[in-house]
Length: 265
Image (cartoon, rainbow, N blue to C red; front, side):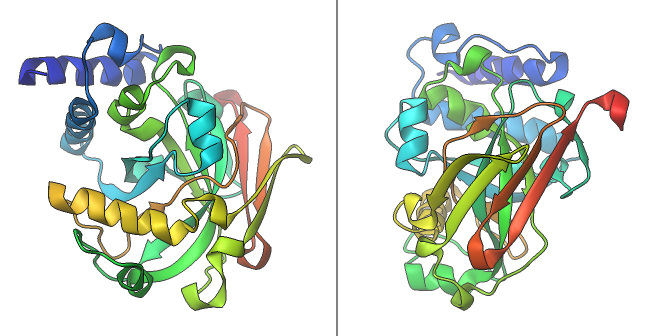
């Protein structure tokens, strides 16, 4: 893609945020778009947010589990940026109308205590860099109409990022075997999904290693204090106003998101 086309595609995604109206798939509007193009589009979208005063507070790995890859029809992970404006507080009302087509998924969030920069990051490096973990719920969303996404579409759309809710119980990394941590997600008291940490690339730690080694050569360093979402332990489920979502993750504790509409806040 030419630079002008990258800017055009990024603006289409930004317009969807502004208008609340999803757009047609990027691959339909811009035939021949590649994964490399998609990351360039994502970078331009994030650049515009930063120019508007937002800040990067972490990154996410998307499509890291077989369940999510199967659900979305892809065969590899991707990554996106987490911005300050995306973080929501646990138990407090979240305006569902902020999102276009929201879904929710449970994750084990890493909070970094040290800088992590690839290439060459190992599992040992990643473990040393983690300050603690907390249970999290990621609100995924798509600016692409009806979630008709390819890997190119979701990458361009910042890995279908929407929001993040962090639990309040920190656990040191050596206090839990993350691959064996079990998860039960419920919506309005009904179980909607179960999973284990090992569903995420064999272990959520592997997702962190993949992320550091993928973004490092692109000039991005994972910074102390940043939140890293390694990928979902279950399928994503649709949510809307009136829904209360809880993910319980054994010894890691639980996290709850409460969705309302703007008139109830």
